[in-house]
Amino acid sequence: MSIDIRKTVEEVRLVPVVVIDDADDAVPAAEALKAGGVPIMEITLRTKAGLAAIESVAKSVPDILVGAGTVLTMDQAKAALAADAKFVVLPGFDPKIVDFCIEKGVPVFPGCVTPTEIMAAMSVGLNVLKFFPANVYGGIKAIKALSGPFPDVRFMPTGGADDSNLQEFLIPQVIAVGGGWLCPRNVIKEKNFGAITEICAKSVAIVKANA
Image (cartoon, rainbow, N blue to C red; front, side):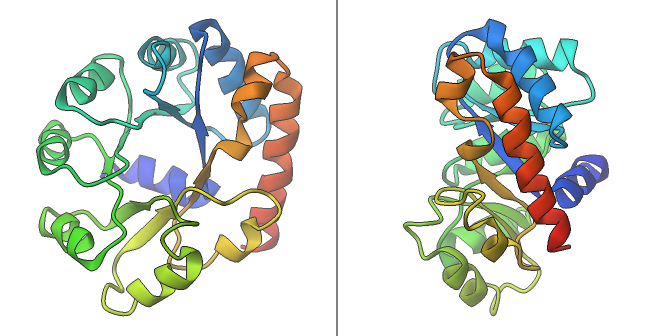
């Protein structure tokens, strides 16, 4: 994992999960996130605009750390890197995609919620893992329990977090908290980018207050 990318994730402690329906909205959304103090953007491949959005942000907002989320296939992984994604996020653990990203030197965060999945990730040298959906698989209670046998692993819980409960997620075992609340899909569609900046600023303040 790139030291610079890990450092950014550790410092910001927030990873917006962004669903873009119109690629033209990607750059304004990225600028809004940055203005709110969150220079990270995980653009999901759940829509047809996802790849174009990643490419647009990588080209036009180079100081935003933009990655690809919801990567389900090798073809998607290859396309994401071709679009200049700086990191790749998987909802689960796919050894072929993980190996491909490692081979290419691109940070990859597979979703791992069981001891077996965590051990599979550790066996290929990964120690920062997505924990998804966090609210379904036990949330912070589960992360604390898993940290017993896996003290060197840090988690990126996604699913169930927002600014109303963010504080409880900010424990040492959590490197960063992911979620769509930082850049809501409907707000992007409405082009209400100022609201995104406000949401991010509020969450950044919570992170700083719990540093």
